[in-house]
Length: 291
Image (cartoon, rainbow, N blue to C red; front, side, top):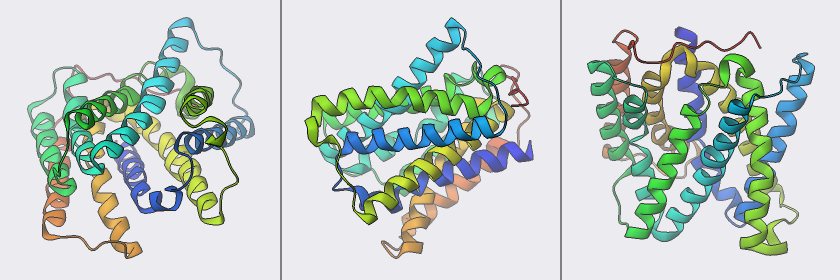
């Protein structure tokens, strides 16, 4: 239980640090950069799989369908929707919509315990306050809702995979599948300019995305998800804007406002409230394999 809490919290915090390095790759072709990110992550994960002596597991038809959906919705569609929503009206609206992930996962996991539902609502309020509603338009909202579907799919579609494949293989297979999907979209959207030699700063940013935000965070999240269930694990998604605030302050990019600090405090309170309940009976209790 404690390892699940630590893993989920660490995973979502690492994902939130993305905001601190996003400025390094602003000028790099978007879809080409994402394809490179997942390609590097897939290679690292496959090397780790081989180094640990984990044999290749052929997915069943049902698992192959889940893996394809996970790669398409949880990785490709999620990234496209976040990018397009931010282009349409800035990052505030999509950040606010993604702040509802804890509530969405709590509801999607079955009939959540009252405290889990209450905690999720508090986390959503804190994440919304920390992110700021900002301004938006209809197109930005539609893209943001697509990103929400992708983020929820990232967890729910992994649950039936983890007992047999384990967190490392689930991460490796899904990231590998995302590469050709992003490459096709990149060629259509950016043409031959989807790839170029990165500058030193861009190379660091892409490496951080691949290693920290993808390899490490994916593994920690998928190892923790079966232990906590989607409802309780989803509470930690509220740490994403909190991590962005902390990273910005550490890097000297932006100092947190009173609203930022209040929102971060609400997120912590909501997580504690949600974790104080027992495991809801309706949540899956699947355990990952020893791998």
